[in-house]
Length: 418
Image (cartoon, rainbow, N blue to C red; front, side, top):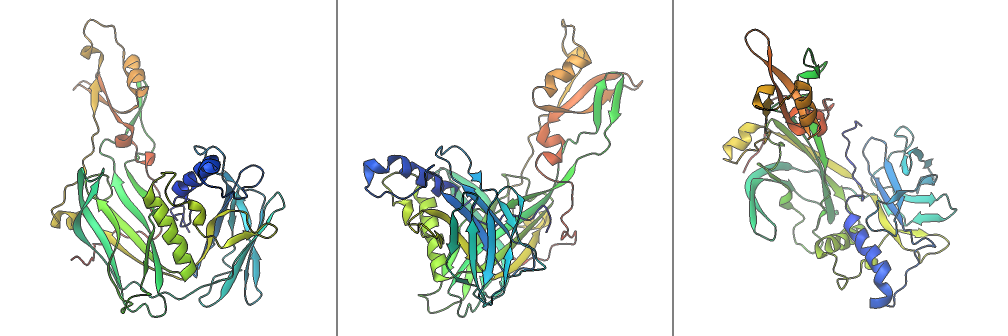
């Protein structure tokens, strides 16, 4: 795993339902007689745990909600977290950072057909246990491809042009329920790279490293699921996974990579994600369907009625990926993203009637959110002006990393387009 490895669990996806839960906690006595047990501090345990058959360490995150809906959940440090399977094997997860518990990939890996239980003992002595979850098989993704498309935003008042990425997966067999998650990386270059450091007008030095080319990352927070249980065919054809607007970010300017993972689901986990999707799409109106109906498969041993957020997910995974290059975007006649860098060049002569120094110009613009990028000299190497640009146009590490992802290749694209 690299630091680009995305977070595949529930953290992003439950944020909006969590706000709804806390809103109901505040108003529940006015609108409904239902009174869930929310522990003495009204904190609710949030479990973000995904066990797969991938050959890697699994990272589970535990946290507590807060009474203040504008406050981020508090990480649940000091817990004991144990994974067990039906064959008697078990492993204790190690807390690597507060609230984050990781397994050792050399000691424990998920296996299709095996069944698993998650046990948690929090620092306050409460013990939680999951239902037994079996890792069901999942079919491979046969094809990943894209087409030109549009998406409506702002209640249909604005249209975005871009490309939509699809997958085909034939003959799901016994796997009637599937979910998709994705992670995307892209290579980008800032147009006004910072090449010099300003000390004073007589001391302007080249930077040790020009931070012009970087790699950025994003993990999906969409809930994309499908059931073929009531369908005569288990084939999945032209399933939309994500939409990438071509002129809204620098994603597609140089080289873009997306990996899509197809995950097996049990019927009960499918129902969990379906409830979550309904809440995400339903807004926060207090007269909407109550979020307490969202099922969890994790329970307090001593108090089964206690509300727990999240789900112990057990899924087999089949990944597939593709690269997209500018030629692919141009062939679709899509608009391209343009940086709005607002390059500014200023020297004392640009302020007639004012005693302005280079130091004053430098301080004024850098305090205003600009980066000094380079000096401008005349033919005799007299300093004339200082050039500035917005941070996001000058230093790529503001939104990316200089480290090349370990899987990255610079070969030409070999894509399938429809």
